[in-house]
Length: 79
Image 1 (tube, rainbow, N blue to C red):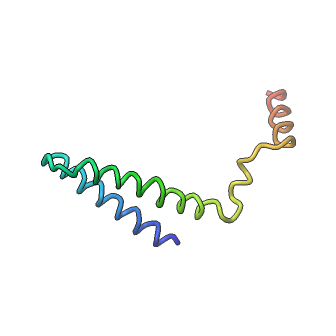
Image 2: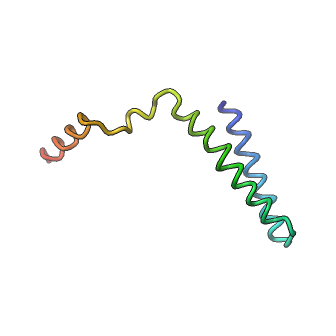
């Protein structure tokens, strides 16, 4: 999964470089190439990255619950 993400990100970077080149040469399809590149990044690369990053429950330390709020307020009162 990690290798797939790296390859997908490199493809995105190359895609953007080609899009910037086409924009600078005033190619008629430059806007379409850039738009498809952003679409690719937004709907393919980012969801796969987010799934890979948080699939093992690593997100649980960022969730606020009552106990964490109580601890935070108790720590604030001691300062």
